[in-house]
Length: 67
Length: 67
DNA sequence: GTTATATGTAAAGGTACCTTTACATACGGA
DNA sequence: TCCGTATGTAAAGGTACCTTTACATATAAC
Image 1 (tube, each protein chain N blue to C red):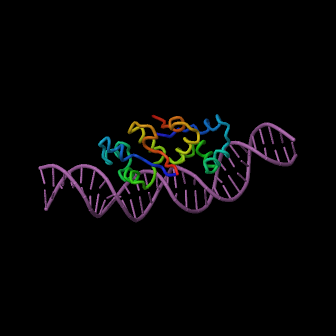
Image 2: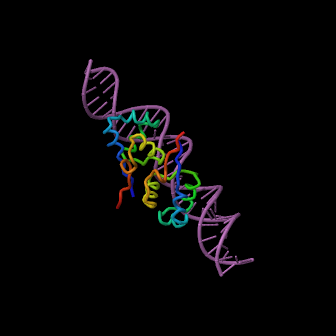
Image 3: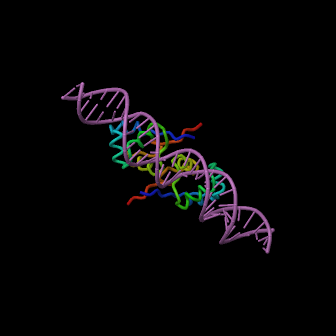
């Protein structure tokens, strides 16, 4: 059960750079990049902050891959 | 920005024990207990599995405490 | 062709998450 | 009382998350 994320898609839809998003969320650019590249999942807290940032419900940003 | 969770409330509403919930989710009872007691937050993956388990949207199980 | 912007990646370190193993308290029923 | 069930908690170990620092490539503008 992997977690799929659409961070890159939503970020690019809004024409936001990794740098700006990192600043806005008070985290590092490397963290954004690693999450977009699927290196690891964000913590629940960071995931919730990203939902608020993009103003979307969970299922539009993170969801479980079934198998 | 703390994460608030209502795991205990939803679990008890459904009359499910920590033991059964842990078995159903294939995790340990200690993990359920620690999360209910606020010792730490679940990973995003486990949080998503709990949403599916209780069949509720994110905001009914986990949300950010504002301040 | 140099500069600025955006992104990719890596190593090292700290903390959070989750496990296994173990012991403990509280409660209800036989 | 004794037993079974439910819950609380602790220590030790492994992996995941996130940081700081650093260097790297690609592109577009001037």
